Amino acid sequence: MTEPRVEFHPDAIAETRAAREWYAARSPRAAQAFLLELDHAIGQIALCPERWPRHVHGTRRYVLRRFPFSLVYRHSGAALVVIAVVHAKRKPGYWATR
Image (cartoon, rainbow, N blue to C red):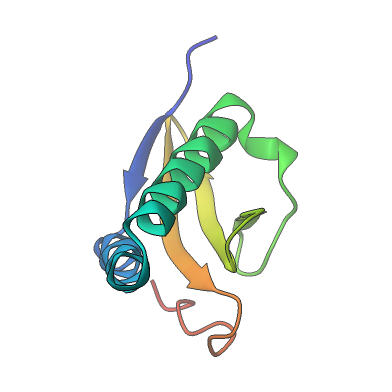
């Protein structure tokens, strides 16, 4: 079985960049660790998309271990679409219109 391709919503890309920049301004090592954990999360989701808990609006959610972020995604046919890279303290559901 082949792994689905992973696509990012443009706003999820912007959220990832903003988080990386925030960490980089404080510590380049933290920024690198954030990206590595994000890559790990994407790999885990791609391996078994249905493993992670159902969330709202037909999505699933993967919670990062070392950073206060979650990946909200949809499994759509042969693709996984990361809808949002959500900070735990942000207004819940702000991404729901995506």
